[in-house]
Length: 456
Ligand SMILES: Nc1nc2c(ncn2[C@@H]2O[C@H](COP(=O)(O)OP(=O)(O)OP(=O)(O)O)[C@@H](O)[C@H]2O)c(=O)[nH]1
Ligand SMILES: [Mg+2]
Image 1 (tube, rainbow, N blue to C red):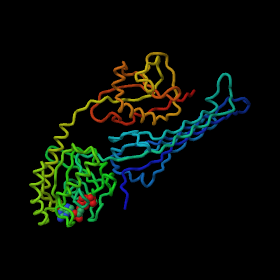
Image 2 (image 1 turned 90 degrees about the horizontal axis):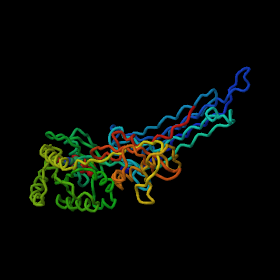
Image 3 (image 1 turned 60 degrees about the vertical axis):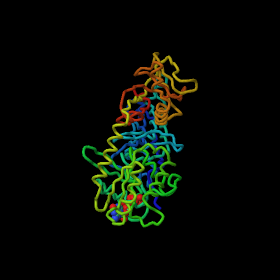
Image 4 (image 1 turned 135 degrees about the vertical axis):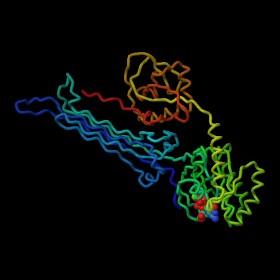
């Protein structure tokens, strides 16, 4: 069976910095020319960027190893080496980046959202840059730093307003196709849908997305079939539509028991109980199916469910179904609290002291007050690890509130890590709406720039 590609382990390695060059300027009649070895170029970063054209992680399933270019070495005559090109990896909207242990590093939502997975090594300084009054012509240059290499997990959770759930071959893909302009692949054997299809549906004033996801079978919540992969996609949807096959010839099945089986799977997966539900009794173009639909309808309605009889084949009931979906979506959108969250923009900058702790002992966060600036260099944390860590911590601990309570103001410096492992940020809380806590309109806001190189 084909695997369902929405979870990929990506091995990214950034480029190494080019070595600095040790060279002495040579010219006729000037035997003691100064040092003129150029710096090595920086290695290229590996960067994930949300590209709306990309809908699956399939490319990374086929090619999980990605390398950015190395920086070029410096040369004589003060020629600096070229920087390695940044390797940009396009990913679908809604890609979640985690460590192999499952720790969330970034949640990439919105076109252009960016996350640096692996940072290129800095180029080594050439002997020209290393010259000082004490050592006027150093006979050495610095090596480029190795680029970071990192394994991350990319996970795609489809973001849709409505998920169509149901047994394999219930007609989910057919319905998405019939309801929208999307054209999912359809074949009449189980597990046709290996990648969720997204369809855009318009009903009256409401425009919403419908996700068709792989068919569900008993035991799915324990990982049977495409179960868990499937359920991951449902998590973010505002509402569910049960697509019940009224024309199934499988003797062990009927629409009511199918519904119970699916509900049991959803319940054991958890977290989906509060989602509003609709029922679509499908395939009523088949006479026996219509009879069965008419028969089970009262029972479903008695359970408080809104029921629509439809046929993806004859298009009967589709308008009614899309308007019923639109009502549910509109209600869900209206009920969604207009959360105001504080977005954190992180930028490295020199440390201001004196320091005062804002968290209990042992925690990593400190806010620093006024004092002459000094650099705190990061070593053990790579920039992106630090960003991922901080973003996660901010979200989990509600540290934003704590920072405010402890007197932090916009522009206060926040330090993560200790001593020479510390990474320093400018803290710029801004009020934003929605789920923008972990990412700005451009995810690159969360990127840390390396400490600027001292060039002369
Ligand atoms: N007669 C009839 N057949 C339908 C209708 N809708 C779907 N089918 C058929 O049912 C079969 C399965 O349809 P799909 O849309 O692939 O079903 P699915 O629910 O997406 O299936 P999975 O992706 O495997 O979970 C196909 O052979 C369709 O042609 C319908 O309204 N009437
Ligand atoms: Mg399908």
